[in-house]
View (cartoon, rainbow, N blue to C red):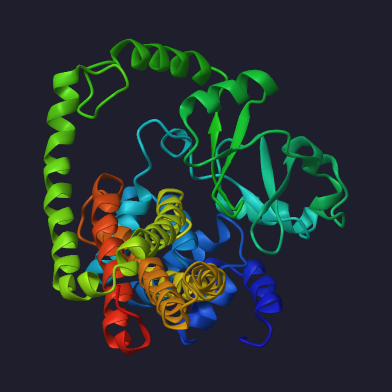
Length: 422
């Protein structure tokens, strides 16, 4: 099965869920994942629920979080709670967090139990599976490619009138409008109104179908909610708004400014440790802001990409090692490039090989450390249950300042024999 997961998934799709579960239960979890991730909505849900709970827990833990979250979201509350209870606490908490879409997002408005089939299925196979899933109402279904990405949709009456040997792809109509799960409800309203569709598919960051927003009547209800939000936005929410009072802003911002002040003293203390070195080699004081500035920019870049990934659910805490290694590599390579440029500039200015070497080495080490910090700080805060957007920048500023100062002044101290006093 592992060698031919595509062929195996086609065979599984034609089986009854109970028979499919019996065929999969003895297979390793990673093999089952390779097969299930190729099955369309409805089929994979039924097969998973037919597996023993212990096996299901193994499979969910081995899946990519995006797929397991989408799968769990389509189950009823009772089944979802039961399956999550069999997972390890960290994994279950992560999946629960991903299942909770923001209040004003398409993810909260969508219906997750949608009908979707592989575009290569025949009409006869599709009708057989539709009957097996026993849906009370069905107007049209969605078509997916082999990677479960949304491709088209088919009206149910076209399926009823088509020849049984036709593939669904020949009946499909292009998707004219869709929204992402984290898109605001205002965008849902706009697209429902603009395209005059009765169903709006909802996709994740990889364009995999996770649900659909249905009903033209939803537009009026959403429009009322939006008007209400606009009326109550200023000064009412617990979070600061653009027009909140100055005192409200002070109460929200001042504690973090005080914390930032304390961390600034910490960075200053690091510089104080090398007071004698700076006093002896005054050129170091001139170049010190460059070292700190470059590490700060590197950390900010890594932080921005990681924060975006967490916000858009491209990554979760589980991906910490992959993200960290990627940023480490990027920081190291960028550090080498900047070290060459900076070292050359410093040599032209100072005519000192030692000073050029020191600033070059400092760039490589500080930018590598800053990139690692930029990736890890928001992930660690997320893991601790804190809001990364609230305090990541303050913590990162401290780390990057210390990394820049410590790298530059530490290396200067070690290689002081290559410097000229003054």
